[in-house]
Length: 558
Image (cartoon, rainbow, N blue to C red; front, side, top):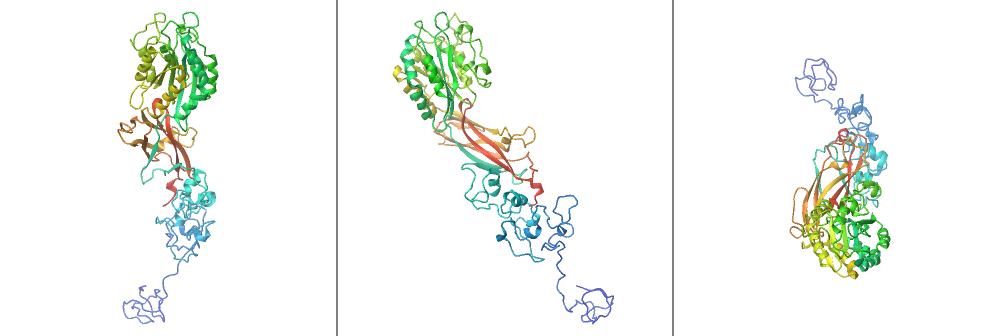
């Protein structure tokens, strides 16, 4: 180094000695020239905390990685990032259980290791491999390699496996097939993430209420329903709906407005239930009687099944149902059929008689004995309000068939070509006709398809008023396969319109976490669901999304 003035010395080692002459080496001053005496090399490497990393590399004297109040600066701290792994080990990636990957011990002045090459050496980086698990978690909880994002090399990151419950150290252990995991740091500087998901669009859940005309001429049809319901009709319906079929069945009957004798407008023998044998057992109570004075009470009966309204003159029903009491405590159910929201309501009518208040004069009540009986217009409005399907099984009666076709049309119970679904035939064909109708609905009838996010109702770690589905900021239609017009008509920001049940629709989901900062010190797993909805807001398909929020990034340099 250049000297100050110094006195004559036998050997100048570069220290000031007070001479006013310029040292020329070996004690000879010859003006201001560079010392060419014996060179002792650079100053000795200082490593005050003995971790193998020089004080200069540790930012002496000011750099302090530790967050704790009063913590020492890095050059004096043997665990600079406070993760429980000493700097001397992190600097050469010598992590517990993974010593075979360690570098040789550092010599003062050697550069420490930087696993994720982000510019922060391991001993300063609380997440050395940038996998979302802190080094403390990996060393002490998951027992994974803090320097490798996928310890077992199975293609699924350590963070995902630790959150999903599979083993991040066993390549044969993985999350369930089809699971979706999205890692969302709080206010991720990389911005939102997008994923696209495919969904099927066939009806999967429905409530089917059978309504049987039990006037005197219907004995053959009653016998056919009783003999085939559980053995033929229900299995055929399940086959038509396909895998994942979620059906409920109910049984009811009608005759005519109560005006003496055995007439009644509606009688519910079995409310809707997933056990079809309950409806099968109810068929033993079906018995043909009376009639002979058409028309009958089909319109009033179906209106009551959907609306829950009735009149004293209907017979067998009070003025209005009490949902919780009449539907087994289910306060969400509606109508005398006890239909449940989120399922497609279907009424299957077996009849051979004309209808009171049929389609001929839709706003007129022809039956003066019941001045407030539901009109055709009111019945259609109720079908549309509930987005219910109507299936008419006419037993050799032109009058019934005419009304059945009209109600199928007005309730939008249409096949893939847009034609009303209605059947006419002998009692022996009722089972085949019911199965054919449900098959057409499930495999041919078009419907509008939309979506919604559903949060985990059991989640308590988010701030009050927040839900897990809020991690999904947008769910928008992207495409359908086949494309329009074969697969669907069009789509907008929320909905695919007039979708064929064979179409696969794709929604794009935008994920971002702008409301939950994870200060727990460990990665957190949240669950949310995407539901795709069809007619009557019935769920056609779902996918569960797992959201992983790493420990607070603000406490993790790099």
